[in-house]
Length: 256
Length: 226
Image (cartoon, rainbow over all chains, first blue to last red; front, side, top):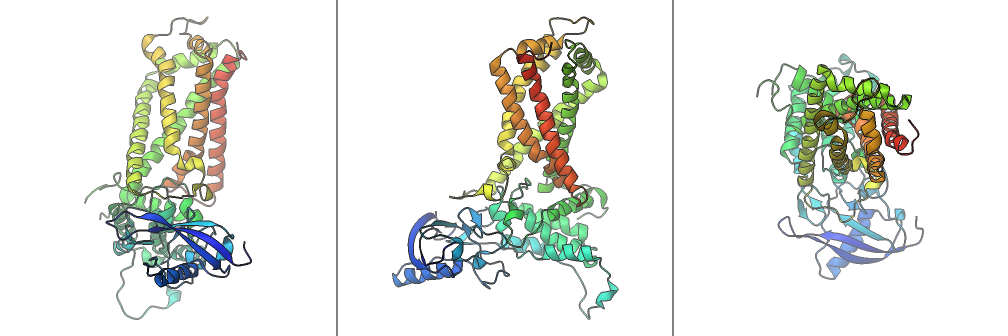
C-alpha cells in the first residue's frame, strides 16, 4: 500500500478491432494519487493520450459503483485485479506500490471477441439469458407476496445467486474460458424460487445448449471462478445446475 | 428432440462421463491396491499369489477387466476431446495469468498428470499385465500357483523402474486429490452436510492409495519383505 503519489508503468493491450492483431503498449504515468480508482487512473492516461493527439484506450465502464458489471480489466493476471470481491471500478490505486508495472489485458475467450483495446463483446451472455433465463408470467397485478411462502434458506441462496452482475470475470479467469459459474447463477436464482419451477428443467437445457453454442469451454472444477468472482458467487450453483441438467435429461419426461 | 437428446454431447454431459469413469477407476484402485497389499503379509507372496490367481481366473473379474479397459479408454479419450475444446475456447492466451492466486496447480494440471499416468500405465501393463495374461509367469510357488510375486521381486530390482513407479504415484496422488472431489461436484453431489466429508475422504483416499502403491516397489527393492 502506498501513501504518497506514485509513478507507474502500464502495459496496456491495444487492438484496433477484432480483425487486427493487438499488442501490449507501455505507458509511463507520474504522480498518480493512491485515492484514485483504477478507472480514474485510466481517465488520467486517456487525457494525456488525447492531449498528445493519440487514440485513448477504449474500456468498458458504467456505474463505477461495482454493481453494473461493465468494467472488465484483467490486471496483473487476475480479473478485476489483486483484491477479492471487488470490481475494477472499486479497485483503488492504494492497492499498488510506487514503481509498479501493471499489465492490463481484456477478457480473453473465443466467445468474448475483442471489440477494441480492453473492450470485449459479451453479448454471448445476453443470448444465454434470452435462451431461458427468465420466467413467463401474465402481466397484471402482482399477487400478495405472502401467498408464496419461501423458506429463508432458499430465499437467501436465490438472492446470493442473483448477486451475479454478469461481468464475465469467471470466464476470463477460467483456464478453459468456461461460463458455468455465470450460467449456473442465472439458473439458480430462478430454480430456487417457486416462480421458477414451471420452466425449471426446460430452462437448464436451453441455457446450457446456448452456452455450448457460444463456444465457452468446459468446467474442470478448479474453483478459479468462485475465487475471482467480485460478487462471491458459489460453486454450489454449478453443482445445482449439473443436478438439474441430469434431472432434466434422465428423469423429467418433458423434452425440449 | 426426443428421449435423452444431447445428454452426453453437451458440455455437462461430457463432464458426467469424466466423473462417472473417474469414480469407477477410483473404485478399481481400491481393489487393485487391496490385493497388492497382500504382499505385506510377508509370507513370501503366497497369499498374494492366491489373490492374483483368483483375479486371473475368475470369469466375473475377467469380464470386469474388459469394462475396466473400456472405462479407462473413455476417460482418456473424453479428456482429450474436452482439452482440445477448452483450448479452442481461448485462442489468444494472456500475457500474464496469475493462476496460483485463485486455484491449486494440480487442479489446472489434470491433463499433464493424466498423461504422465498414461505413460506409466504403458510401462506398468508391460511389466505385469502382459506377463501374467500373455507371455506367462515362468515359476510356481509352494502352493502351485503362478508366482507373480517372483516376477514383482525381479522387476523391482531395477532402480530406474523403482524411480518411475514412485514418480508415477506422485502423479496419481495429485490427480486424485483434484479428481475425487471434482467428480462429486460434476455429478452435482454437492451438499452442505456432506461436502466436508467428501473433501476429507478424497484427500485421505489419495494419500493412502498412493503411499500404499509406492510402498510396494520400495519394500521389494530394499528387501523389507521376504
